[in-house]
Image (cartoon, rainbow, N blue to C red; front, side):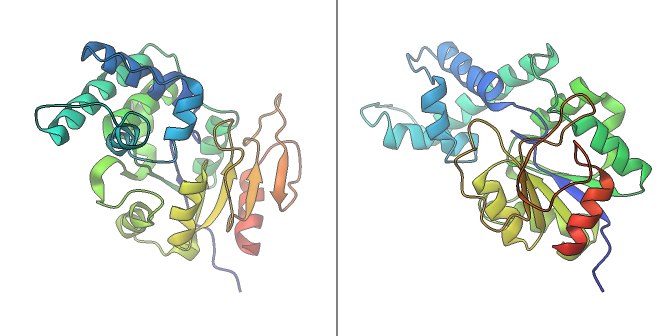
Length: 255
């Protein structure tokens, strides 16, 4: 007999909202400008940098693989930390100005999960302040209480694709991997959630559409809404034009 679904764990960037292209990328460029740097991460370059999940490590990756001639006389680690702090401030400003909106079906799905008595959590590498800003801006401040756990930022030392953030989340909500389902948006995210043995549904985006989603139990364009049908690219067929809580329960039971 299949284990009953009790909770759904959401990734944030690219899953709850399309935050990368017009959110994090713009915030990084503004932080670089503030620091007097002539760096500019255009959309193509940023797509390559997304191979690394953590913002600080993304800067380090840029310096080692794309800008190795850059020299800094001071403490490089602190330099990167300071850049990342500045970037996160710019990102929160963008979110608070409602530049970013939720992806199709996210609000509907969350309301459906709450009505069904299913628990929700978040597992992400982005900073806690970034998560809070996005939720407050799109769902309202009270929505922060919808989640039994918001595992974000440096809560674990090993970031995605390591499974640590999902394992931490499971510990915090007191459930087994078999009792949960995850929503992810990238290959690294799937490696993380599947590594924690959680059945995972992918909603891809332009930056991740070529990623390897091996191990996921389904891949969709997005969750879909009444006026915006989704497309199932792999995995179980769904009942209608958009993913429902009943579909999740069915997919989880078969996963």
